[in-house]
Length: 135
Image (cartoon, rainbow, N blue to C red):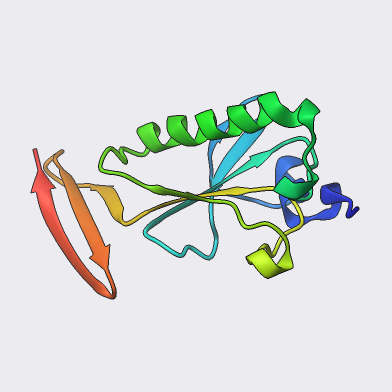
C-alpha cells in the first residue's frame, strides 16, 4: 500500500504547498483543481490517508458518507443548483493519478461576480460559452 501522506494531497492537508481551499472540516478538505477539466472542478479528499476507494474498509463507511455530504455542501456553496457530476477514479486503469482517494466535483456552469452586483451565469459546451446576467 502506498503511503498517501507523501502525495501532493498529503502536502496540501499539511499546508506544505498552497491550494485554493473552499471547504474544510475535521474529516475532509475541498479545493479547486489546478488542472480543471470543467469550469467548476473541485477535489474533495479525506484527511485520513486512503489510497483508493477499493482500499477503503468497513470502518470507513461513515467517512465515505461524509465525503458525499461534503460534495453536497460544497455544491450548494458554489451555487451549482442546476446540477453537477461526482467522479471517483479508482486505480491506474480507472484514471487515478494521485494515490490518495479523491472525489471530483465537476460542473459546466460557473458563477462569477458582476459589477452591478448581479451574477453572470456561463454555460460551457464543447468549446463554446454563453453567459446571461441573473438579477
